Length: 102
Image 1 (spheres, rainbow, N blue to C red):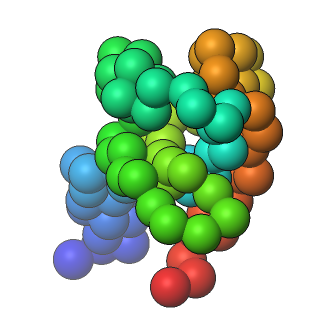
Image 2 (image 1 turned 180 degrees about the vertical axis):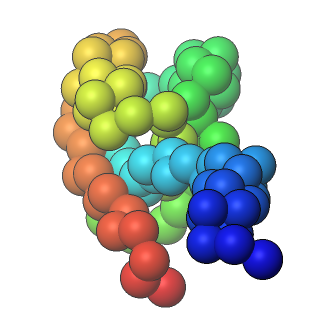
């Protein structure tokens, strides 16, 4: 097989491979206002398409939210502008997942 045909075959193989795209994830710990209706907060969170999972937790925080977005910019926007602005969310702690670790 000539070098030209071999290179062409390799190039076509690489082009046809599925593109694996990294979608950034984060876990966000939420503190809610004392006496706030956690269920209404959970409902509002679940309305956001980037929210993958919402769980109530015991300890220093009230809720644990898993967020996934198409881009890091969209992830940051979701946390800063959409989650943190929900009524009765007092504070947040964001933990952005590092790709390839874990």
